[in-house]
Length: 118
Image 1: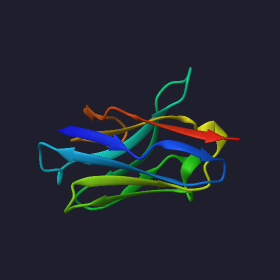
Image 2: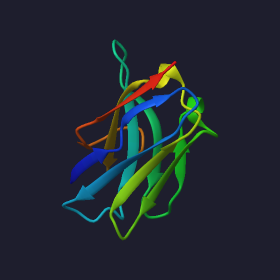
Image 3: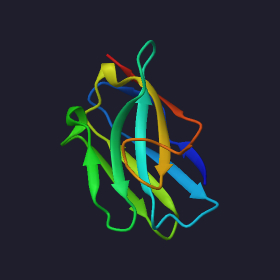
Image 4: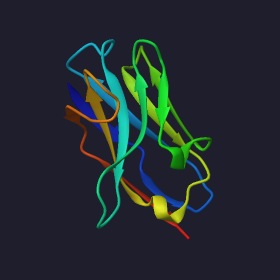
């Protein structure tokens, strides 16, 4: 599975961004797709995940109610809509795919930088 993340950028605190992750190389129907992020000096952390077949979604407590993960079957793409962004959410955001769980990735995209100005 090849993953290509895009959509990062600079946004003011309270603003919104939508990240995209385009997948190729394999049918995703049996996969979990997830977003993780890594801030400078911190470990990578789970943000949101989706079971491709069922559409069941999973979120870290810190983003519930503000972030929404979704998928587009026709485009083989996963999205992360991020609203009410906070300065401390500045990080490199990675998309990942796993055949077994949403809490880890077996395949990773290259990451996209999200910078939230205070």
